[in-house]
Image (cartoon, rainbow, N blue to C red; front, side, top):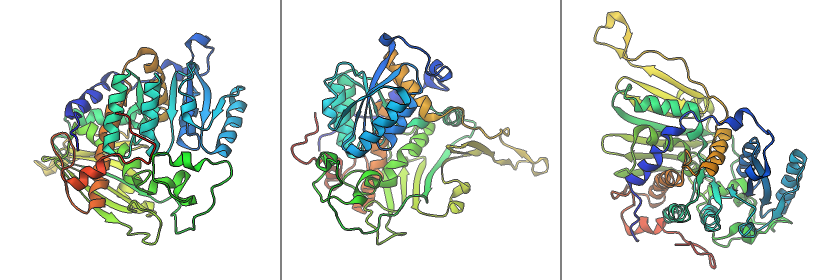
Length: 445
């Protein structure tokens, strides 16, 4: 496999751009839907409007200068329903298309929001860059390592503003938690733990294949993925459980939380990765991705761990939190999730009678504003200024690779050794890193 040029330098450059973005609260958030001259409007199109794509559109529509010019979805039922909702909200009828390529030649569209299944992200993002559109692409940005580098290359070559949908990077409480860790007050960080106990989703039990629902272009939905019969549990939200389209909870939630772990510690490339798990909770389900998984990332002087369980009781989750990140340091630990972060100082046992702590106590730090809204506002601001977003493509590519390494170890049943650029060693691992597309789809290089 050809070596990539992606390295620690790329990730650090992407992360350093966050300095000016900490606690970013745009003026448009405080003064939504004010009157804006047509020449100052940002016209966007949304590709994939069933779930997250629709949530991202709603966040962007809170900004006065944003106008939704077009909607795209391969499911005509979803497309028509969303168009009706949008017209009711804005009083405007958007252009409706089934194939995203019909949007790219439209000179009136400035940017696209990509909310399709993971296996489509790379092609749609690269094609949008080639068409000189700025891009908001959902996480994880890709399903193969090779796609990640191609996406980074496209953004650079066509000089596009790209925002990856890891909205936690725009959250002030996440930023302040990372800033505290980076301040050194915790002392040496020895371990970072990341987890999600996902207890709310339906388990896809074996169900016969069926005819394609009326109004759905299933062949276009599959796109570069292998041709398979239609099954309701491989479609829409259930696609995340199958290797053809996604990477399970490892790449769904893992990219969010592991991103915070790497951001806080400044770590980039693990020396090795080892995953354990499988279909422990629901051995008879249709899921290919494991319902239970533990991954150990070895950085030499630091270990970062990921764990998830499917449909587990919430009260059994670490610290009673359904998801989270914990930084364990010499002087205390920080526990963070989407509800805020807390500091737990270590007791200073040099003089037990004083009952002192090694760090000054802090009240719980709570969210300020909605992370998704702030992320959208940052994207629109960067479209205007042409500055890097708080989560540029380099950062999204790096964490996608890290999550993919966890799944790679799981699928191969062995430890993955990484080179200096974070690429896996061994022909079997390198084969999993290379994009495999159904004809006539080809990854642009």
